[in-house]
Length: 358
Length: 135
Image 1 (tube, one colour):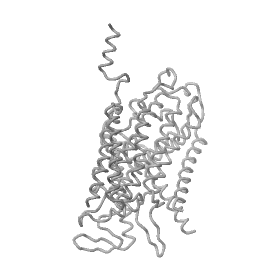
Image 2: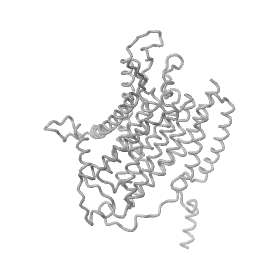
Image 3: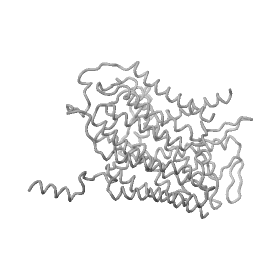
Image 4: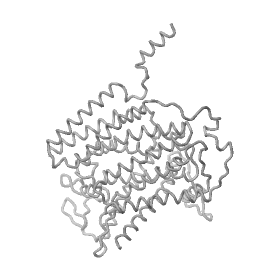
């Protein structure tokens, strides 16, 4: 009974945090673009005259979505047109269920793992639900009865399936090193030390893997420089015929994907919730110094470390979005099939060889 | 039992989505008119059917994807168990990857991975055909 209550509380907390962070991310994206283009950015929305550097803007946007007319193209497919934003939105949320955001929290005799579900097939779960988001995009393009939507949907289909292969292959190396698909076990494995001083983070054992995984994942989320399905300055893309909350779901799904993928970068390649040299009892430095800490402080530091890494990668994705121009379609396909894919295969073979020798 | 929280999470996420759509349906206006209902093409009058013909290259990419995605699925169980299986498993997989690599090299050499490929062959052939037509 108590366990069920704790699980429900965790699910509720994670959902609220994700949706809230996504709202804040829309504000971060606007402010970052404003900083880079020498503007002020969103600063007009106010509550009783208090503007709070535009932080009320996401709320105003959200409210606006609720009050806008929800338009269905008369010759489009009504059922699929409604299904598409749902399929785009909720897989992005569900991926977060297997990402550990902290170690076990102990209160008295109670042990609470800070993760919604510790699946032994965790990474396959992420791949499966990440794959589902493709349907949302393609169905949106297909059901809108609009040339530009159809073009956007087709581009999205070819781009996302191509980069899905790259995402899968570039991560195999990391799984070989840690020998598990379970995300919590991968994070625990990253708390060991290499050569006695270097934390065994994914980035240090799989540098090439990370360099291939990072662009592949950004292409999978269809962000600039890989935003050809959307291409706001040319074909407007698969959600041309969407309005109201259905458009809002697409818009929100993009920011939730940014957050979830940032959490994934941190978890897989940057030690997840680990702080270097911090163990369950406190710090154990490689030069022999020790600094014992109470359990709650350790848990707090770990959750903080997770969120700092996540915030950094969210910010990095926004920075990339406002820095780089868009690829051409043939460049995009070339990068995937003749760039990332052969290098990922090479990475697998080399990693296997190193594992055999060591 | 491991999956129970996942199902609850999926249900909660789906409930969030449906609640948002329902509230939108309840409070948003609904006033269709003929101009609003036309297909949006940046303000121009829509021309022709939206079911345009598209490049067959999308199909080729989908076929190549199928092969390599199955390869990835084979790689995951192997990657998890590589340390206990040892050198023999590594050689096995190296042979498997090499066979697929030959496939990739073939597709690459056939220029099916290059997006801008004239459908009738290489540029010289097309130029020759055009010259024949002009003559």
